[in-house]
Amino acid sequence: MADVTQLLRAVEEGDEGATAALFSAVYDELKRLAASSMRRESPGNTLQPTALVHEAYLRLLRGAPKPENSETRWDGSRHFLAAAAEAMRRILIEAARRKDRIKHGGGRAREPIDPDSIAEPEMADELLALDEALSELAKAEPSIVELVKLRYFAGLTLKEAASALGIAPRTATAHWAYARAWLLERLRSADEPASE
Image (cartoon, rainbow, N blue to C red; front, side):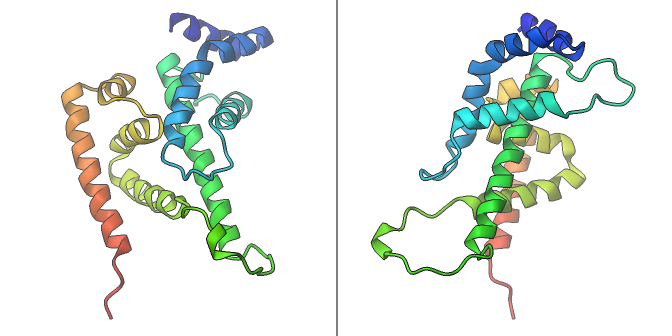
């Protein structure tokens, strides 16, 4: 991973050859992250892990500004991979929102369909509910939300996520337990019908 850190620095300095070399160096890891993210999607999803990798990579290198008062955008390969996981999460959320708009009309005429040809239900609603709950949790516990993103969307183990965030594994375990309980309660209460 030291090579990846050097390639990230070269990319930031404008070395175009480093961009292709970086993609080759991180491709397998990004593909693993994408496959992990896509596992939670419905089987009929049109977005494939390869497309998710390419879109996330382009977003990371194309328009992401450097943090203020910083010489570099990426603080090493783990930071880059965490940012890639976040980019993949955002792409999946955008896709879910597009599906939701289309599902609720999207300006199209209604057409009758054959009930036997209906596929499994999309997971867009669940993904949007999770995103909303994570946004709410982020207001109070932003570091815990980062752990959830790395675990849920990037598929990192608790130990890998703790290392990426620079926290102790015990802290990560406690944060993960808290996040799971909080999110479960939040998602359950969102599913319950409003009392009259």
